Length: 189
Length: 189
Image (cartoon, rainbow over the protein chains, first blue to last red):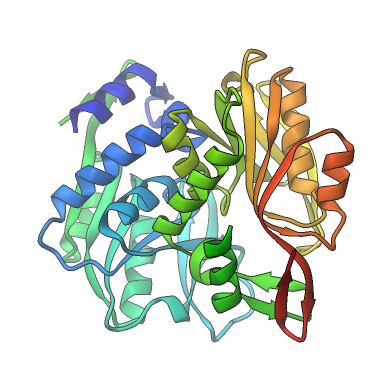
């Protein structure tokens, strides 16, 4: 998606040749019009698929997911991140480790919002090691729902997440795939 | 806003005659079409005002804010909640106490996204004790930006937040104002 790549090139900040900050349109400040265009692109990529729910994770996945949900006229569920605590029978839980933040969280979704009849599209902002997406996919499986695929805004393809998810049999559609960072520049596929 | 009140009546869950859960369309599952209608209502309420930025707080304020921002064609900034830690000169910080969760957080916004020329609309999902909205207003003031007003989806008017904000001189527009909970029912103004 060229528009997205141009924004990343123009506004993204590469730190230590490993981290990409896109705080000006995705992770702290949000550009709603760009989010809508990203939503339209996800709808195009998954055209023809039956989608009844979108599943994402707080906070940066929400904006692009609600735009996609607005076009498809389907609800968006966002998993919440919580410190692991006592079991709650009313929620699905998956463990997610963040390498960036060096912490593990449980992600939780109320059972009432995912049924076995649901056909779910997972959406997230970043894909690096694939921990969040794998956790969300795990929750879809716990609910015995169908998983249509995983829509990602920015994929760091040099990290193992995308490959792991594809090997696990999931369809992954990433709108900007980063091959490498080089001298503070972003190199796309 | 009648459509919103109807959804609260139909789907809201009143706990202990003090807490209202609207997890089916706002706080865990999101109804994007309702979020868009709420956005349209905020735009109507603040019509004629100059708005250059929308400021909200993660996570439940994001969906309705991006819809409002999409109509107004302005960026949305979301404050992040963090455990208080060492000072960072690049961010504005305000302390916010949550009575529901019985914890205090810092809310933070990168200084680069709020300028003194900005004219800011604050949006949040719930208004009860007014701690989050007051913290966001405080951040707007730290940036020497103008505060247009505060748009709230659901106001629990029997708690002191709205009155405190109005007394502080802020314009508050709440789309559903709850007078009381009675036997598990929601009574609106």
